[in-house]
Amino acid sequence: MKKGLFITFEGSDGCGKTTQLEKTASFLKENGFEVVTTREPGALDIGKKIREILLHHKGTVADRCEMFLFLADRAQHVETFIKPALGEGKIVLCDRHTDSTIAYQGYGRERDIKLLKDLNEIAVNGLKPDLTLLFDVSTEIAQKRVGNEKDRMESLGTNFFKKVRNGYLELQKENPNRIKLINANNSIENVFSEVKNIIIELIKNK
Image (cartoon, rainbow, N blue to C red):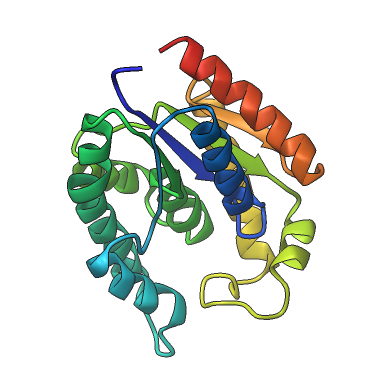
């Protein structure tokens, strides 16, 4: 495989995407692929500072401020990490990307979805994931998995996360070729079996 692959892992907090990303990275490395893992927000030095504000700031963070912080992190991440890694032929596995902004700020915060999509386009400067894995889980199960120790975003409540989940499902309907829906209510191993099948098929066709 000469060209790199960009695969994003999406879903509401508590869906298990981070665990699946780690298992995917191990699987691909064991099969001889050069893999890098990353996340949004907070992959790089600037992003780590932004992540601290977004998840742990004790004061008020205005909705528009929150939106632009996510986008600023993404723009830096894409240009200084993701694109260079893809240019070297690596497989990039990213925990959250553009779809999170639409699901959380657009559907969850009820902001202008078209505007968010346009701003995302500016932030990514033409980059698109080759594949997005959407881990769908009931809001009630997801909240139980998160537990009692919640960050600023995780503390937004059940109603907010129901809107986020619905937003993700709408995005999947709009982009069925890129976004593959996975039932994350299943066991970790059953979910991972489905993930492997999807990724193996992607690699075969590249």
